[in-house]
Length: 328
Image 1 (cartoon, rainbow, N blue to C red):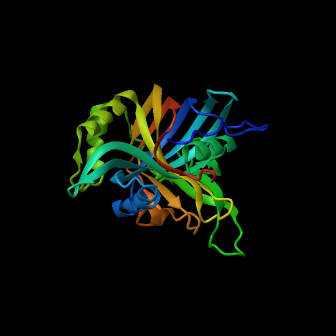
Image 2 (image 1 turned 30 degrees about the horizontal axis):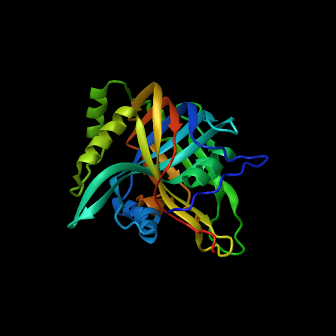
Image 3 (image 1 turned 90 degrees about the vertical axis):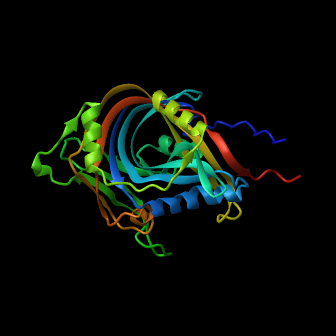
């Protein structure tokens, strides 16, 4: 029988607010990029599959669904903690997303069970957002200055703490890491599509062709995917861990958790195909180009969307966990 967790002790000056969270008035700009599927698979192994095997759950496997990834820049106007101590905070964030498929292998065939989004890099400008996201859910959030372009031609940028090359004498400094700007701002090409038919037709014409290995979905996968779509639900998977106080190279707590981001009250949505470029600075502390297998430090976008909506962050589900219990 698993030992019950002790109650969480809320302290004065608390900045780790308690889930669930209701986010009002989210304004998201999302851009689709092409990565390398083998590099994405390596990230799945490093951050999800290897910990799962260590934690004793060798059945669940996460694989990248596609070589396409997404970069989002968002303004979250009000994030409300719905349990005491109640409060709300504002934040700007930039996230690199990859869509994975969770499943299992049977007789050498991968059986897909469910979708789950994975976020290897997240940058936020709010300490409560960073602390709650990392400590509660396992989001790898970092404090940054996140700027959303105020005009159609203005760049989106992320400045965060980086290290050029690790070493005892290397200083961590705040530097520009990401710059997203129009590839040809003088062209005037700002194609914005509203209807589903013209959006799908244009997307299929412009996106590079994908070559998938055969994945066999089970009935639960089809049911959950359809249900997620109609309910505006985005399942997310994360590696939650804390360094041990005695040996910092070890984790005193480690878990693979899933939880849902549920969109509601869609206030507006548009799709655009004007080209943008993501410029990624080269720092050893942030090997984004290598991790995603991008072909260079300048990455073109293929399609973008802008959405305004509300968002619910719910309770988490532990897929597997290790916790160091007191010795008797």
